Image (cartoon, rainbow, N blue to C red; front, side, top):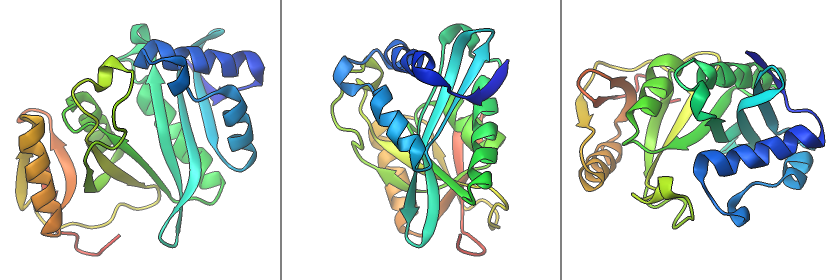
Length: 214
């Protein structure tokens, strides 16, 4: 599997098609090639995972700011179904990390559905992100059947050079229903806790107090 930058119009169109294949969304909700061309000119990162000439997956992130910090916001990560569970998503993220550091950026952010335990394990245990925000109905109503259960999201931060220190686990949030996990995260974050780990065996998020604020 080769991980590299997307090249040329044909590969950009393959990214468009893979968006529709993975999210099953309509044309209006596809990020078009013309946008990605312009975004890359000002620092966006668009990487593809290739099996031969076939696009197996891609990661797309654009530059932004959080307070005084420059960031890359990783807006999309998609892997074709036949290539899942082969480490492609993690490989794309690690390549994105190197590309961000080469641009002088030390934080990458993204959102994900906290009910998706596979993503939770990748994000917290494989990559080492933290989360301190729960966003209700972040994307609103979309055409994707993957969003039929709602678009509540955790906002995560990946500190690329050094993960902030944390105290021992103070609380656990179980993966249950949308309403229960929403209440639990919103209360915990309001109390100053930060999600730092995901226990795949118990299907619980572990929250702690930051020893030093990121």
